[in-house]
Image 1: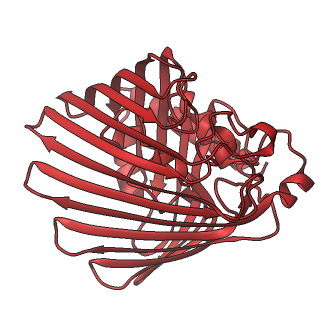
Image 2: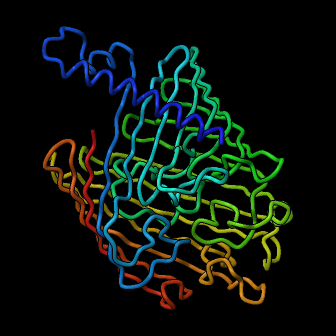
Length: 391
């Protein structure tokens, strides 16, 4: 409710300000400052993007594996993203990030409205010398991919992207140890939770360092009590809808995540990225001991010129009990986990940018699973066409 109130208030204020400025700018006789001048002088940055696509699969995608494309054959406005920020190097600032469209419901946090508009990030920032402190809702430290689809190189998301938190609500302190290295500490409600599902908090720690201008490493870790029910799709990030709070509290346990992202520019045109994850969860019903999964995703991106590029992605995730890739959508048959499962995918994406603000992408993806998670099949092919416009 707090974030919803903030969102409504900020939206109203921004709408009033922008409307007033637009009316003033439309008056050709006025010699006052333009909207661009006002934003530049105030150091407020406004940017956004549209992501619309057509995606088709020969099977029904499993929501625990292909998190952001769950339709077999559909056109969709996946995302309209708007980011308003003022984040100076010294003093107070803040950021507001709104996402609307098909993906908004998937990324919605527990305790927030699960609708077609998501308050993805909203935080206050204070920076002083080597320290930057933020408080509110912000993006995760983990993963090679991000929620902003215009910043990713493929149309579909990696399997690993669905196995990490999207956002966290809490506080985060970043300390610049040098121009090349940052260390991060934070405390939050847990994985994608505006409202905490229990009384415990989740700790986060991160280290990012650039060995050279072309090579970097980011390592992050999360540890805290999380919902431990069998999960797939939305229930993976959020408690199962309609489940009583007392039941959620009983079916919970410590969850640990370790994530690493290595990136290097092999040449001026060729970039290689490697992302690895390990997650362990206690007290999963139907699983003896800890449920865990581990995965690795590799990316190879080649930029032919300013207009044309190609991106390759290959990954594998091993789910030791079927907890993270359950073909029964989280409903263990007879209370027994389905057993170990390996899921793999390979993706090739071609990008064409006729303008700096616009890119058209075409993609082919192949998925394979040891268990029949794709409409009682172990294999699935996906084809996609996407249009990205940034402003």
